[in-house]
Every structure is written in C-alpha cells, then in structure tokens.
Image (cartoon, rainbow, N blue to C red):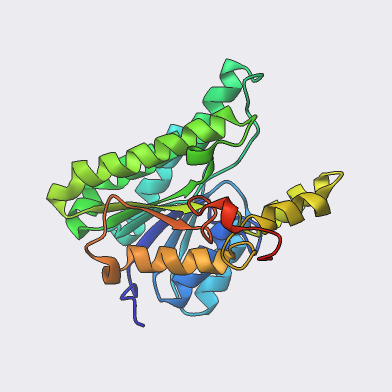
Amino acid sequence: MDLGLKGKVVVISGAAGIQGSIGETILQNLANEGAIPALIDRNDRGFAYVESIKKKGIDALFCKTDVTEPKQIEKAMNAIIEKYGKIDVIINNVGVNDGVGLDATYEEFMESLKLNMVSYFLVVKHALPYLKKSKGNILNIGSKVALTGQGNTSGYAASKGGVLGLTREWAVDLVIYGIRSNAIIIAESWTPAYDNWIKSLENGEEKLKSIVKNIPLGNRMTTPQEIADTCLFTISDRSSHTTGQFIFVDGGYVHLDRSLLTDDDN
C-alpha cells in the first residue's frame, strides 16, 4: 500500500535511540517510504543515521538537541524550516521511564515533565504555523503507564497522562485548520532498553515470563516494527479522517479481561 509519504517532511523527536528502538525503527520506515525525516535528539547516533539514509537517496536532517532546553528546540525547528521550508508531520517520540517517584526532589520531577511532556508542547508550538499551511498532523507516542500506573514513576506517569490530554486538546484546538492529532499507546514492547532493564533484574527471566504471560494476543510482546507500521498508517492520508484518538498497539494488554488468561488456555 502506498502511504503517500514520499517527500513529506516528518519531524521526529527521540529518533536516535539504539538500533531496534521504537524511534529508530519508525525513522527507518519513514525513509523506506520516501519521507524526509528531520531528527531531533541529543545522541550523536543521529548523525550516522542521517548519513545512512542519505546513501539510500533520501534526504534527511539531524538537529542535535537537548529537548529539556526550550531554546535548543526552537533552534532545531528553525533549522528544519530553513532547510525545507515546510513541515508536514510531527512525531513526538521522546520518552524515558526515569523512575522519578514520590521520593524524588521537586527539581527531578520537573525535569521528568520537561523531557517527557513539555518537549512535546514546544515542538508542536514551533511547528504550528507550518502545520497550518500543510494541513499536516501530529502523532504523540504514549504509554500504558498514563492509564494503568506502574509504581515509583510519578514523573513519567504524569507526563504521559499529560501527553494524552494534549493529544485531545490539540485535536479540538486545531480541527478548524484541518490538522489531525492522535496518540499511539504502547504497553510491553521488546526494545534494546527493555532488554537491558530485564537483564538488570535479579529475577529478570521470571519477571519477563510473568509479563509475557499477561499479554492476551499471542502471549508475546509488541514489536517495534508493529508500532512503526501503525504510526506510518496513522500519519498518512490513508488515515485522513482519524483525529483525537488513542490507538493502542499492545496485544490487548490494557483492555482485555485477565480472567481469560487461565493456565489451561496457555
């Protein structure tokens, strides 16, 4: 299916994660569709990713940016506009489950909000004049933690809850401009960061088995590729009448009744 993304300038934050991360997987899929990715990230991997994409004959731009710094976000967005003169899509993908709980300081809590939510606001704020011209759209990457909680992660939970609020607010606020706003909600996805977390636990293998057992569809984790596929469809014109939606790519983890998952069934 041609998603019609060729030549679209797609700003994506948090796209310079380790190879196989959600952001990097979305990035590579954008390039494969012929979109023009504009990366905003603090990691120097972004330079190598852009060079690799350019070798495929696709233009791309990396703006090294600490998204907790408003001036750096503004500078990055200005650089994107200076080069391309337009923005068609925003994908806000930054997210670090940083363990900022009730024992954290005020400063630590605010830093978590700045990273995981305020950066979303600032990227969209600076892109808005150009989204209005292109009648573009916004896709926020969310987390089940906003809805289910997790424990000892107040900053991340508050941020991701706020991201869902912003998604709906922007859908309402921008509908008069034909701008769509949606969120993808992820539960348990096997990424390099998840692998590292499991390996850090004393009982990691047992923990992993208990998590996977409670994912209804296939008793397996969602792959980054499955998330990327849904993201690309959602930002494309193939999803042109979808706005204000929370789209769950989670194998039924959040909504399906756990009583269906008996040992006999598994």
